[in-house]
Image 1 (spheres, rainbow, N blue to C red):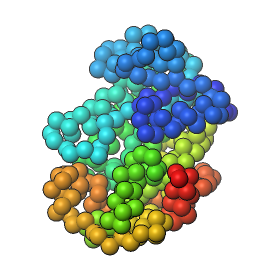
Image 2: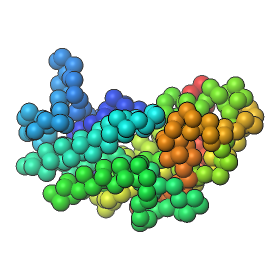
Image 3: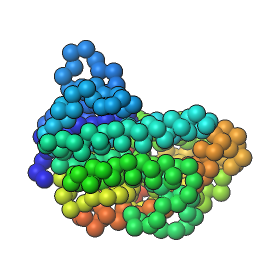
Length: 306
C-alpha cells in the first residue's frame, strides 16, 4: 500500500493515540477519531458505542479508509479489583469485537486493521527469549491478550490485512511508565524492583510511532508483531542506566512485598514479571530502529524533554 490518505483511530485521546494523531497530521494524512462523546461541530469525530448494536448508527461512515488503528483499552496500571479486571477485559475484547463486526461488513473495508495488544500475552517467562512464534503464557494479562487478539480474527477472515501490535513498555518522559519514574530517579531515590533480574521489553515512543507507520504500509506483515526494541534489559540494568543518564545514584531497591502491598496482583504480572521479547517480525521485514539500545535511547528522549 502507498502512503495512506485516510486513517481512523480509536483510543485517539490516549498516550499513544494522541502521539499518532500528531504524527499522521504532520505527514498530511487525514485522521478521524472514533469517540464515545463527540464534541459539537467536530467533523473529524465519529460517535460510537461498542455495547450497542450496531456500534455506529451509520456504519457507512467507516467506508473507504486506508487503515483503521484500534487502541481502546482501560489503563492496566491500576489496582486490580474484580470489577476493574472486568473493565480491563471488556474495554479491549468487547470494543475490538464490535469494531471488527462493522469493518467485516463494509463494501469498501480498510486495507489494514492494526489492533493493540501487549507483550503481557507471553506471561512471566524468566530468561526465555520470546518471539512472535512463541506460544502465549498464563495469567490474567496473558488470557486477556489471547481473547483480545482472537477478537480481531474476523477482520482477517474478511480479507483485511490484520496485525496485532504487542506493545512493550513505552518510554516517554511526558507520559507512561518512564514519566512516573523520573521524579524518584531525579531525586536520587530510584532503584531496581525486587531482585531486578526480571527482563523488561521496552521501546521509545518515537520508535513505536515509526513502527506503526511502517506497518500501515508493510503489506507483507500481518498477525502478531512485537513492538519492542531489539535489546531487552533486566530491571536492574534499566534502573542503573536511567540513573546514569540523570547523573544520580540508583541504590534504593523496592522490595517485592512493598509492590504487592501497593498494587496487589498487578505487581506480580507487570512490575515483577520477566518478559524478554525480541521484535523478530519487524527486524526481518527490514524495519530499522532509531533507538535500539537503552543508554543512547534514554539520553536522546530525555534531552528532548528539557
